[in-house]
Image (cartoon, rainbow, N blue to C red):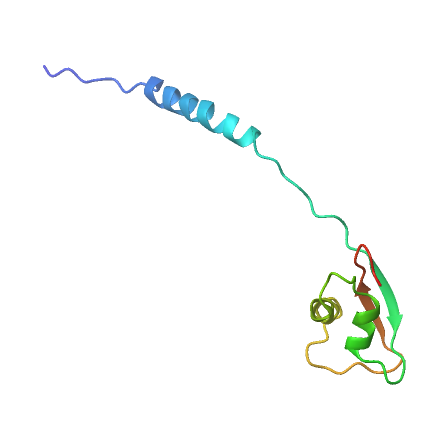
Length: 98
């Protein structure tokens, strides 16, 4: 007669418990930060307006105008399309605009 070993769940339970004891403290020490809500101004494009002119009036002195232009184009899905008079654009507001 050959003796068969019975499979027990105890080693698997112990491994799972050990894993939890290691990962739970690591996860609980993480800090998650949410980005603040972006505020926008609505600007109606006037004849002769350019994205540069619009961005320069809504860009903080410490920020780059090109960055604001890129954000305006992204928010309004402009791509390479020109802006036209009467068009409404959402312009991201910085914390301290000019």
